[in-house]
Image 1 (cartoon, rainbow, N blue to C red):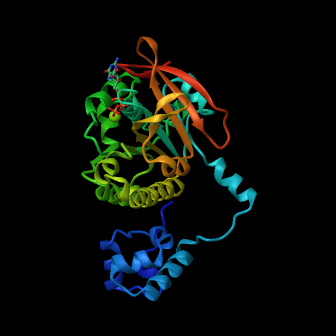
Image 2 (image 1 turned 90 degrees about the vertical axis):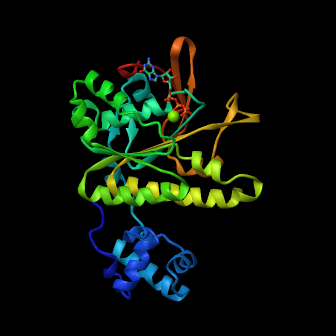
Image 3 (image 1 turned 60 degrees about the vertical axis):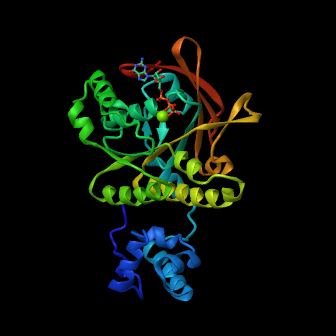
Length: 314
Ligand code: GTP
Ligand code: MG
């Protein structure tokens, strides 16, 4: 589904400029088509006029910028897949599961099971579609070094899947800082040319940003970079008919958020770019509660589930 044209198909782009583009992280038509001339000019060390021409060329090559009728959008939405969470109640809350072509933000405090849910989604995504899976490979961008293959094995075994085969379909990259994290989305795009990747996980979306951009003066820049990152993720979702699941910590704040003294990091930038936002919290007796707080077409509500050695269950 990814564009097969190379950058040299853009008028005015020869091998030298193509190399500069690649070096700057522009590896596909879409990333150039949505770039700003000033940004592209600076990163590739070319004139702004030249950059604008390249962007226009990439738009034509990538076939972006046109309007679609409602019928066409309905047609595209028919391709939307639903990925099961492993819990019936949770799936129902989401109208059948995690949707493809969308970003789902999971936010909550430590131990609220964001990472466990990501593991379960990864295992489930490798399952056949008639079992609620996506019959697909998975990409995990791990920023906190919390990926545990042993947990994947446990969950796979419980579902009757071959643990080793499941692990083979899960591609994990550790992101060492926010720039690296952003580059890994391009790498995922490359991987998606050879493998069907219908689930991309970023756990955690915001931890590097939070650590690197400290202080009030850096907020605008942080939000700008984060915004672009979210945009790249949404492009991945659309081009690969993929589910994007991102996790987000919460920061203690004096003003309450939905009756809870916590707010998701990244504020409205992450919120607006996410198609679904789900707040996870610890409930009584080891239970976990998922609350759908933002969705374009579903009512708000809650679902209760548990985390067990075998994975996520009702
Ligand atoms: P942070 O990344 O620290 O913000 O937390 P998180 O939301 O990612 O939490 P995580 O998904 O790591 O949840 C950890 C919790 O999952 C633990 O406190 C356990 O309650 C539960 N858990 C993890 N592994 C197991 C397991 O093998 N068996 C059971 N029963 N529970 C588990
Ligand atoms: Mg975690």
